[in-house]
View 1 (cartoon, helix red, strand yellow):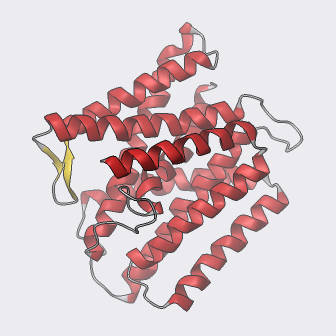
View 2 (tube, helix red, strand yellow):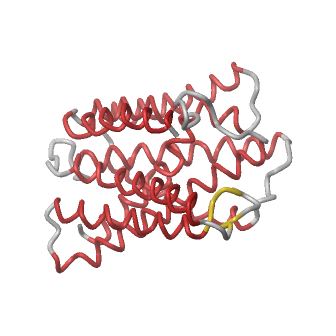
Length: 279
């Protein structure tokens, strides 16, 4: 717990400052490096041992992200973000059949490698769109974009923290023991309450009028729900591989993927629902 607290106290302020004060291209580059670190761990998680094969997989995604950032093709970023939302709906179905893909054959590994790209790249696209302001032209930026991006992450962070605190103290009934034995129903409800509270307070600070608070609550709820799916899906992949953590980069927290599994699922959903609700 002490390691978790120290890591959070160091990482969280740096992330907040970067989101609020760096231009979108710099945020895109930094977040790409972080997300690609998670993708590197993912390739190991799904059973790819050869470093050359993992490097080729990573470089293919680096090339894709670089091309997207260089071209500033916001419609393409939007399309990939939508694909990300669609993928997480399919991932929810996978969670209902946790033994699917458990085999160690090349087909299962190939499918899991594809799912890694479908999780990471659309999440990065959604983050760039949110930070930029989701405008149709790169020349026009919503000044509230960085704050909305921070709110999206804040909802996920609050949900994760509240779920851990409530689940570890009050949780008894397991949520999905076949996938993640540590998660409980009380933890889930705690996470929902924590995420929605941050969403409501943050949205109000961003100027959302009381008449639209029900829309804000819906946005927060959808974001938390997506973050849970992302967390559970990574847990499922770890169960398949027999690993406890995706890595050891963050003391007390595990690897990069262990820190961003909820975020990569939540970002495309937050972006889509926010735009759909007109917030």
